[in-house]
Length: 342
Image 1 (tube, rainbow, N blue to C red):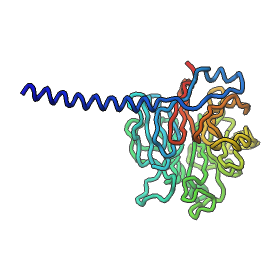
Image 2: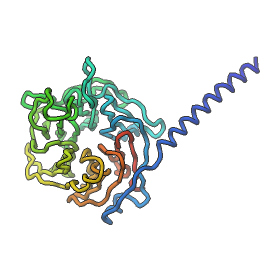
Image 3: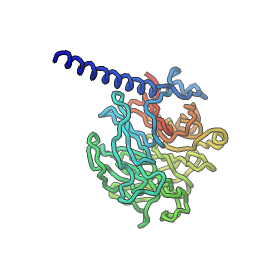
Image 4: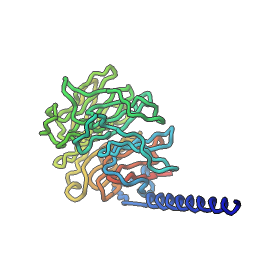
């Protein structure tokens, strides 16, 4: 009997050791360095240390998007848009499915290439707010962050009675007003001629705290990433149209966005590098970490290019930790981390 118990113990010990070896191997594979950091201005030294390196922390996605760091739970949330899934990543456990479905909850299978959630953010109360491609709306998850459920409240789904195409990225101002972009990427054909597209243009919108939807901009062909400068009086919008790969900046006053101009144009970079202007974040000093052709650009608040995190695969978005010392990047099939400085 003792020998039998010893055999069983040894058997399970071997299995456990094999599992641990496999987990360690996967973790080692995931935490490999990728890309380089190019420096164009000495001011970058105050943002990214000389020894900073991008590293892969998770992989195996179809198109990763919308990263959001959740400080309270030490986890990163991000969308895999084609698979209609939100994942979470933690240092201890790596990647895990967090929420599925995330952007399309219809009974019939979606015919769209990108039906899932895209951009993710928090409202003033700490609720998870999602840009839902498949459901064609801005929505709030009706569940605690640490107990996710596919239950949603619509925050905005129409403008002048017409359905949005596929809300893409979003940000709240300090007053609790929601700003978001609405390109056609969540529609079946992903273009302006799609039979189900109800609004003729691709807009940038504001949702007031009373639920009223305001059109701010209708002149950007593919509005995508969106963020507010410190002070909430300037709005920056990325255009992911390959023919006009620009970031635009607008003055905000009341319910209007005025004096729109190019913040930075990546037309030259786009000739030689993969990707288009997509999601981005702005730090407390007004520096932009912006995904675009060739990787992640770092601009100062006047649109001067300070550096580039050069990556081979197209990048879609990024997120900063609250102390702004760590940058997370969604990079096609990868999710990356850059420890910017100590």
